[in-house]
Image (tube, rainbow, N blue to C red; front, side, top):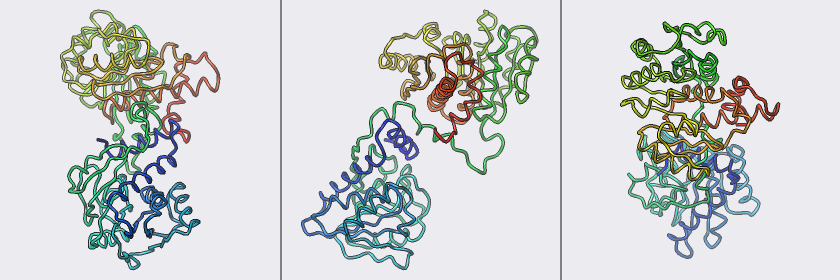
Length: 478
């Protein structure tokens, strides 16, 4: 079962994997025609009521596979307003081949011809809310008809995720949905056919361009909507918490705080004026700092724990105490990962180990990514937290849902790139579930590194990734 938002991501991922949407539309249309044919008798008349998007495009394709029947296609709107190139191409194919078609330019023009089967292809899974005109009038006409109704992907007017309708909706007898069933279809009385249209299984596994759709922003958003991050790090190392904090800012967090030992606080603040730096008394994180950190974490949407902390026993004890008392969302990185297996915590954790750190946590490693995937899934389930295990292929799993990222290059073996990844994770965990955040963060971090290497070759600095992060997340070439 797949939600409408995830389906849109998978469609785009399939294209990124080399299966163009035009090919998927051809397969969808063929599958639709097959189901229509199952419910049609020889000599039946079929009327297609189509919208101007890809849902309508699927039906335009289907018409070409139904030549043994008399068909008529009603386009709701002007042909010049068809919204996608591939839907327009298939509409044009109907015109060139002189199939019977008609434009319905407003609700007054809605007149459903006598027919035996109506194909409802007005609106797809990505549209919610009450039907507008002329779709609302067309839905009423379809419902009043005695014809058998076959809907494409979801009956128009029905929310694909909930099965609910905000006003009039098409009452379908049959639904042809693609790739996987949508949650809302279970609530309908209609028969549902799930058609395999050739989307690779890896379009749901590999993190690709479609997954970045979650990064879209509401134009009416306010300050704070995209997260406040607290980075807890530093002491033995200065650059790590600064890199993580700056990466969180570049990845879209609205506010980023860094809590670090006071001996490095001024240096960390000097990396970026926008970082809000809080000095902790002493030269190293200690259990005496835990209460202060818990107070500061109260306002944070995500806490990034680990960059530059080191592994002194007092430091790891402080991390254990913090995680045990914390019940929010956190990214755990670097040496702080050693404290996770012993921390009995209610927090939602995204842990970001490389292979060596995973082994130190008690996990197993393997060379091939498929074998690694199985091991990471099993260990994540045992651990009870989400893992992002870094490698040539990054594996992200909570034990049930898994993503694999393939961006990145050997130039990123340089120190500090993991701190950048942790910061990106912190920004994304503020607004997304841990698996989504980890997968997208790994993809963005690797893509930023690929862009740097493409521009200048190997020898990159971790700080080189910072300017590339926004382009990797929101650039025109994403």
